[in-house]
Length: 158
Image 1 (cartoon, rainbow, N blue to C red):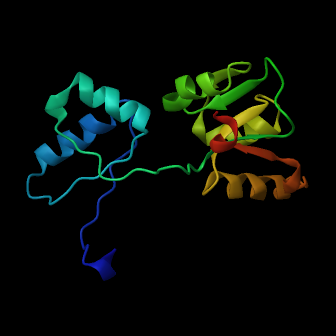
Image 2 (image 1 turned 180 degrees about the vertical axis):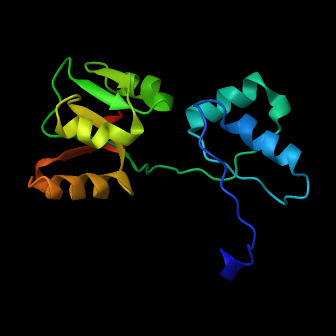
């Protein structure tokens, strides 16, 4: 960041789902000399939040189109009734995409071990970060990382 002229970068703590825009707005209001305050939020949370409270006065500046890093990782094909552990902000979305499975909110910090220990038959994961971490965990347990299967959403959504 410094090589690009960003010399004072601050990271805000994580917050509960749905509070992202309010936290960004609050930080910017409390720090008016800050040139920009950026946050990250799922689009299915951002849009209704801003609709419900336009006084937040935040703007979406980037989005992913046609390719998402979101996938479902499992140790085999998902069957009817299997449970998928997902982030709280994507439970509703994934339940619509996987109507034959039960999608529940699960802790982000333990989802890889929850999958490998059988708590969930599938977990929400991001191919860019969490899949490599899952592979590493599997290797550390003496498991074959190729045993895990991934369904990227483009392959599931009709």
